[in-house]
Image (spheres, rainbow, N blue to C red):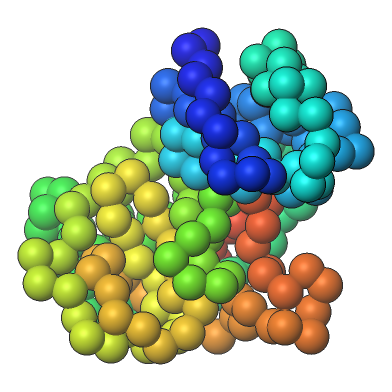
Length: 205
């Protein structure tokens, strides 16, 4: 695994790795061995940002990021969240056509096994969900929508995701859920946090 370290302001170090698989393999080990001076870890598609306390010895943080061995990825023991979805999205038929399958097959593939929260971003509560070899890789829409309703379930590239609030967006929309993705009064506020498994469950339209 290739690792590159970059100082990120005065109180963080950015670790760059090869790909998302490397991030998923590293995050459990980093969380488990996190030193007290590291106050937050923020995963990305190919990065992990380690935020440390002001004045903490940066070289110690860099050494920890460099030397911590990756874990074998085993998501089976992670928390599982089930999301009920009505598969009636405006792009469902187009996604099926792009993949050369039926609408029913798109739904079957999306619900066949749990997805994993790889990282968050875009908006509070939005999670990028990964399921390698899901058979659902599709491009973003050529023209983004100015408004996507909260609860919309979408696909883009290799990821699936759920819009936590009304917002612009360019993902292919295949369904919708009533689940509350972000609640400031909840601890943690995000329903879907990195490492959590997500199973989509089809409900009648």
